[in-house]
Image (cartoon, rainbow, N blue to C red):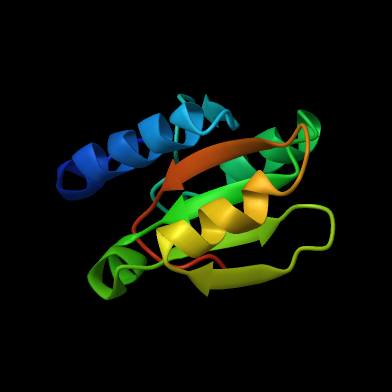
Length: 108
């Protein structure tokens, strides 16, 4: 989980805890994030580690009380409330999610 927004830091940590409490293997990205494209390095990291899903919480999602779940294999993304995302990923076995925070929405 990349934390560079104090406004979203606590919410992201809470989500991480909830995922782990539901036995979902969750990895926090701690690497450097570029201001120009904060997700680029994180997506490459997730690809290199073969992480199947990336959960994104940005300001726009937080404002709407949504999250973005990105399938790293198909590159499809969907926005939903956390409980819907949790149900969706709980059905899949042995998945790993990297939680990311950023200041703008991810492009497909």
